[in-house]
Image (cartoon, rainbow, N blue to C red; front, side, top):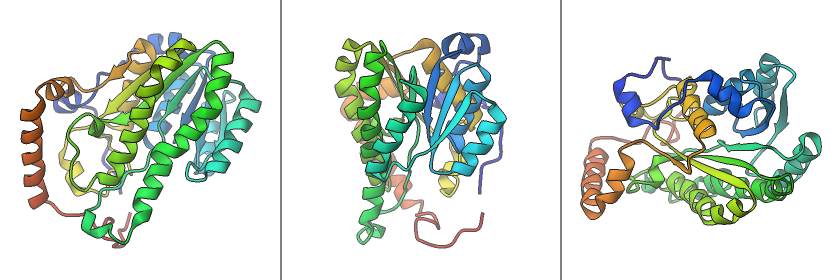
Amino acid sequence: MSFPSRGPNLADRLASPRRDTDRARLRAAVESKTVLITGASYGLGEATARSLGHAGATVVLAARSVDRLDGLAAEIGPRAHTHALDLTDLDSVTTVTDRMLDAHGAPDIVINNAGMSIRRSLALQYDRPQDFERTMAVNYLGPVRMMLGLLPAMRDAGGGHLVNVSTIGVRIPPGPRWGAYQASKGAFDTWVRSVEPELAADGIDVTSIYMALIRTRMSAPTPIMRRLPGLDPDDAADVVAAGLTRRPRRLAPWWVRPTELSGIAADRLVTALYSRSLRHSADSASARGEVVSR
């Protein structure tokens, strides 16, 4: 199951962070640099890898789906390299991180893109602690373990740039059915913001991108997502490009900041909207454990 591809309309653009479609500016930012991209086998990671590879970067592609990575690397050419990475296996994360450093040296740019999303009612999770354990491993513990191995090498090499692909869900009041996902993404976002001053002292810039909806296989099983504005992976890769060319500390949809500033009133409004949507929507078939044909 997947979304039909389409270019972004006005609602899609307004709902999402700003993009940078200037290919010359992207080439100037990444050409001849080594860029590590996690979650590179599908969706945003795949589109970003293709975009940066075509812009002249050496791309180090990491994900579990090695066959997909190999096909993508063959398409990009000799500047693409692949590594099997399972973020749920923390000891393996350390091993693979060391292997990447030995093979390619310290990366100039790390794009922490790999993620696991779950939308499921709490009532369906009472006997599913694995929902929380796996999302925490993929979205927080695994990336932290990887960065603990990469950051000293980046510091010793003179600095670098960490781009964290996060979600607007950590910037607005949390919504029902997203507890496992939002808690794990919020954990890594908090960690990144906490260590940011220390990284700056080591010459490492940080850009946190708060993505809205991206139409990928991860969001496709949830019917309500098909009615919301968002971006296709190729267009979302242009948001990552904006993070690389402009290097802002934060990159989010325009409406996130006013929502935060409005404080309690916004919290009450969003909570009311969540409650209404909860009454008029249901868990997806996959969330209920039903077999879904694709």
